[in-house]
Amino acid sequence: MHASASQGLKIVIVGGFGVGKTTMVRAVSEIRPLDTEATMTQVSVGVDDLAGAPGKSTTTVAFDFGRITIDAEHVLYLFGAPGQERFWFLWDRLFTGALGAIVLVDQRRIADSWYAIDRLEHQRTPFIVACNNFGESYRPAEVREALDLDPHVPLIDCDARHRDSCKQVLITLVEYLYTPENVR
Image (cartoon, rainbow, N blue to C red; front, side, top):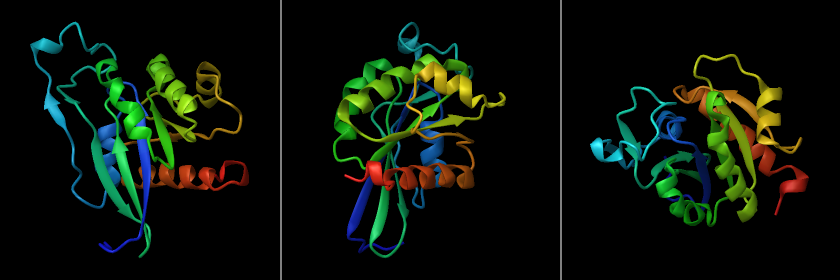
């Protein structure tokens, strides 16, 4: 780790409730991530839809934060956004100053990703889409069509529990950001 890095690069990870954003930050961060996980209580019944995330007992209530050192001068700062609609007011603030974003998708609940894509497009924040593998076969053409993604937006498979898979997602994002049409 380099405490004296001069270039902090902000990456935001967004997506629906229970798609694996906190898991991704935890898997890839070189530091112990800061998270704002809180135990879900009876108060969330009827507010948070657990149908697509059976067994989920905690939720992010602000954001997750992790860090990855690229070299002596460059550090990636990862911000995982909360997925529930009641916390969406935080997203535009999290997007401010972001180099780019990862939209993490559970392909069994694709509609949960529409808001994230809409907000990123509204903010003009470049993004890629990563389908978190929940044991379903990866169907990129169906996901691309369902999300109405532009053909140039990268769409990849990942497993948010595994560091190497998360690193590949980040590499794909950085490569995408530095293609000539995306350099700001």
